[in-house]
Structure formats: structure tokens, C-alpha cells
Image (cartoon, rainbow, N blue to C red; front, side, top):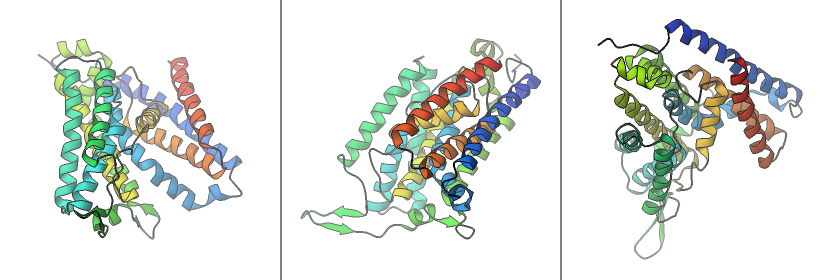
Length: 336
């Protein structure tokens, strides 16, 4: 049986991508215009402002890379924030307190994150649970697991001894490296990791057969199945990739905070979804791309930074972000 790449012609996908890209760039341009107008006495024009924005949005952007693949399959992953917290705790426990080499701690954390994503994918692909329910369960489970292995405490360089006293260990080199800046301190390592994740996700979606299957499943799952697309495996791998991205983000988060916080990543899933939606990836599946997610990340990042340098309170920031998400979705509907 012939396998198809999508439920519509390739040229149609490209036209839809270009249309979404135009809308996403328009949103980014609007936010940048706000930065020019409300520049906080010129702070917006300093390179440090842009560098710090990229650093601050990078962890969210890494999560959004995995979320993009899931959303294109017409799914959703509510567990990304909790998985970030769990892998941050695990990586900190292995590195800071158990003294594992980064050559062991990093792969172990990545494998655990991917395994959790595969569990969510299995519940969805094999047991036919709704993505909302399956990933909601993972969100709760992973957060509970993070609190269980830490006893509800942060994992830091302070190691409690048997007599109740504390011994302070040095921060491992991998933590210092991941939290450093390169090229004359002009770009953060975590930003380069984010861009690498964007590149990997982009190759998957544009160059691999798996990427074509992702679009096909999101566009019309039944048509994809009848055409020979391995629907279950495609979904399973998409959620596994999302779990892997959660682990990458968790490792970066732990390095930035120099500790593993079981509460880390709370509500991060909302920002990741916002980045994907504002970028223009369709929540109904079948349309979108990682380039759009990059634009969405920059839009959210600049919005947060502009509000921050103008001393706008967190409550107002959250409300504005919510309004922008609604506006982005409505704009997509109007332009269809």
C-alpha cells in the first residue's frame, strides 16, 4: 500500500506555512514596535536586553520544540512543565549529591525524560486515551514523583550528613558551562542549545519520513491510516520527542538555578503552548512548523522583556499574554 506524506498536496502545506509565517511575523513586528515606543529610556536598544531575552525564553522554547510536533499531530502535552521539574531534580540529584559524571548524568536524565514522554504516547496511541487526559495524568504524576524523590526539598550543593549537619559541595563544571555565556559573553549556552533543538526539530519535520507522517496524522488520521502511515508509532515518537525536550529543558533549568527544585516548571506548559499557538501552528493539527515556533518564542520573549523593563507587574503580564493567545487563534480563524 502506498504511503502518503500528507492528506493534502505538498504545495498546499507550503502555502499554509507561508500564510502562517506572515501572520506570525506581523505579531512579532507589532511587539517590536511596542519596544521601540516604550523603550524604557533606551534600554530596549542595548544588546544586553536582547541577549537576556533570548536566554530567558530558551527553556520555554526548548519545551515548545517538542510541543510543536505533538500539536501538529492534533495532540497536546500538558505534562511538559512537570517533566521539566522532575528531570531538573533528577539531574541535580545525580550530579550535585551523588557525584555522577556529566557523561552519565546527562544521558540518564535524557532517557528518563524520553521514557516519560513515551509513556504518555503509549496511553494515547495504544490505549486510545485523549491526549488531554493522558498528559494531565503525567503532569500530576511527574510532579508528585519529583516531590517524592526529594522529600519536597530543593536539591542543591548542600548535602545533609547522618548527624544532621550539612556538607557543601562544589558546583560541577557542567552546571557552570550550561549557565555560561560565549563569544565575549554575547550569547548564552542555553540559547545555543535552544537553537540546536530548533534545528533538530526542523530536520525531523522537513527532511524525515517521520515528519511527513506527523503532518499526515494531524491532517486526517483516518486517511493516514488507510494510506499505510503507522499512526500509533508516529504519535508515540512525537510524545517521546516531547519528553526528550523536557529533559533538555530540565537540565538547562537546573544549571541556571544551580539546584533542582521540585516546583520548577510550574505552568511552563502554558507558555510552551502559547509560543506554538502565537507562532501559527494549528491546534487542530496538520499545519505548522518549527520556524513558526521560533517566531512565536521571540514574540513571547520580547513581550515579556518589554513589559519587564517598563516595570509592568506580573499580573498584567499574564493577562496580556492570555489576551494575545486568544487574539492569535481568532486571527488564524479569520484568515482561513
